[in-house]
Amino acid sequence: MKRKRYSRKFQWKAVERMRTCENVARLAEELGVTPRCLYKWRRKLDLAESGEERARPSTHEASFRKQAQQLKRLLAEKVLEVDFFRGALQKVEARRQRSGGSGETASTTKSGT
Image (cartoon, rainbow, N blue to C red; front, side):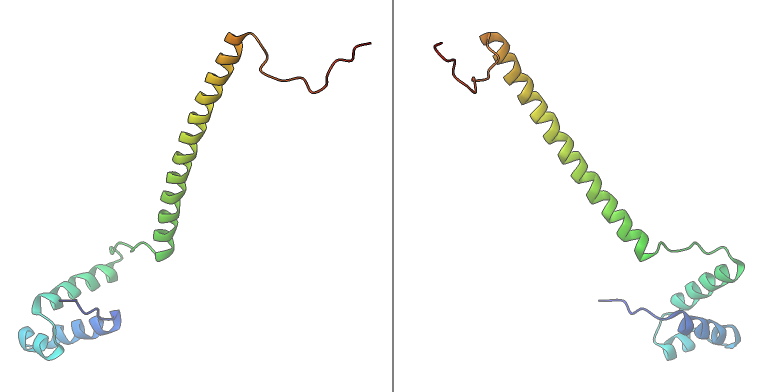
């Protein structure tokens, strides 16, 4: 079952009514929430008023974290590729040195004069 989200304004009004009502269970039923929810909202709003509420990370922050993770993953892949090609190049150079040649072919032919 999907939980319904209530606006901060609705929560604030519900908590204000809760502070003056005699029967929290009846108020909760009227509002369509549980009494536990009302108490939770009251605690949360009391913390917000005292300045102790933790700030929720912004959606921008979450997207930046996701982008940073993607970039780190991509960087790790590129580092592996570089290591692979560096090792392959070292093997090719070692073979050239063993064969005694430079491994290059002449670009011009010698003339017979």
